[in-house]
Amino acid sequence: MAMSAVARDTVFALRRQIAKIEGTLPERLEAPVPGATGSDVTIVRRGLAVASPDAFLHTGIEGLDAALGGGLPKAALNEIHGLETRDAGAVAGFALSLASLILKQKQGLPVLWIGTAEIFREAGFPYASGLHALFGIEPDQLLFSEAPKLLDALWVAEEAARMPAFAAVILEIRGSPRLLDLTATRRLHARAQAAGRPVLLLRQAGEAEPTAAPVRLIVSAAPAASRKTLAGPLAGSIGRPAFTVDIGKSRTALPGQFTLEWNPDEHAFAERTENSVAVVPLPLRGTDPAAASGAVLAFPPVASPAAISPTTGDQPSRQQRPAHRSPRRTG
Image (cartoon, rainbow, N blue to C red; front, side, top):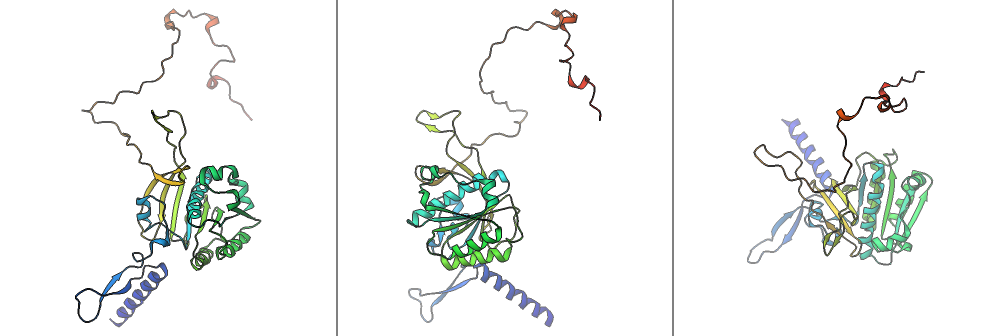
């Protein structure tokens, strides 16, 4: 029994230490209650609930902000994950959207984008002429630092994360390198907390690994909707940029998937609700929906097979014979 009590106390101490590290340790707040006598009433709240609203970067999407516990923490390391290389454009566009929201609050400060020569050669640089039109970011507000090696990029990110001259720091990494381990992300997270500014970690084509980032968003490109006109959606047109955002990790541990559109005019996100489409056959007693009308093409009448005389000229030539009848290549 003595060993069980010791083990139980050890488990409780470990849980308390983990909650303290994660910032979810319950806090005691002394609040006087009108009409109460004697000592004040103690109210117990979780650390996540008592956080100041200014501590989060609000995306403007109520469902996403609520699932993240208020939004993206400003003084923290936030991970934006692209599962495949082809998602690099969507991840970069989503990061620029967040940078636009950050620069609205910290005007006059630039954003530093750090990467290696490999990542910039593979994914490219953002188009400078489109920064202002799409995101409201001036070209001189986005600085780039190209490091020859990942070790140099991590050092630049750690040093820049504690400098008050930047509104935010973006670190773009490709794959799952061994140098980007839990210790390296803890250093970045600690620098971001001490400086009070966000550090965005862009992961291109990498596996989901344990990191110190309290938030991990998995971003991919979503089909763009048609442009809206006064007469309705314009068929065949391409509308606003759209992202599919999955919550891979958060302090609330609430899952969720959202389709967000970026409004280049207002520089803000908008949630898009997909139209419900039947993906399974209707019941036997039901009726199938009418097929959508399409273009009608006129073709000349085709003669019946019996009307075609089996002459030699009607037989396919040697070059027109099916491929499966030709001899296979050997050797």
